[in-house]
Image 1 (cartoon, rainbow, N blue to C red):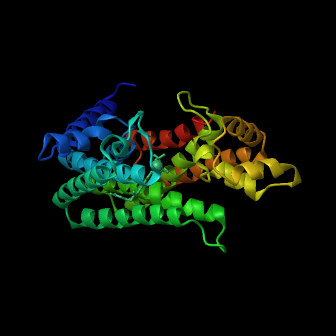
Image 2: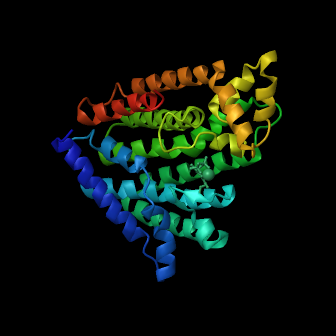
Image 3: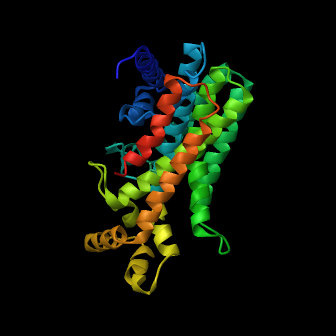
Length: 320
Ligand code: FPP
Ligand code: MG
């Protein structure tokens, strides 16, 4: 679709790309290369896309501010990935060697800090409202990562714990992306609240749909079973564990540990694909995407809102 709206979105996102590259420039060629490493590897730029789209809900948003707000969320996201890959001992990020593998843990941590400082410099130019929200979001990212690291307390439901981690780690910055766009557009407090709820829900739903794709591999180019190999809980595995019957003993055993043996990964995938927990996960994603759509109702009608609604369909269509 080629309209004035889509051309404006594309032009703004191009400016964001330039800004990301500038933000990665540092005082030595080595630091610049390391800081540009994950940015250059690409990514969906989902968060800047959401800032831009939400901003275009307004009558006359300022382009410079849209670009700045987009840079703040993407730089924060990329910074968190440098740190996350150190903690996960990840080897690959966006199809390229991870920064920790390429430059070592210390450099990867410091470059994450550097990129976070760049996000802070940009957000300072937008105003204290933006700084306050950025700080609160940073706290939620850290909190989510911390809860995930610690794991659920004995008396806490594992699925509830998992959903809380996903909301903090993924939902929070996506919610802030939508709200930043609305702030640039000068939307009302009620409209910002709607964007906050929408962003948080759609962020969670994106993560949950990734969980299902890891079992079904409905999207080409992804190897199924990554979460099973790592032994990390996901929506389908937690739902299968919650509704396990006497016939599920083998699946429960396989879900109780990381799987190194490819034959066991294949076996666990086959059992999960046949388990009602997978269908339940799909239903939950559909339910939540409709919830997200509902939050959009008070926002100004038009192409920007249509684009936000299309995201609700897109998360469910990925599973088809
Ligand atoms: C990816 O998780 C990680 C996040 C979404 C956030 C991680 C947050 C921090 C490290 C704390 C904040 C730090 C800064 C500097 C802002 P994942 O491992 O589930 O996903 P993956 O498959 O993409 O690695
Ligand atoms: Mg990770």
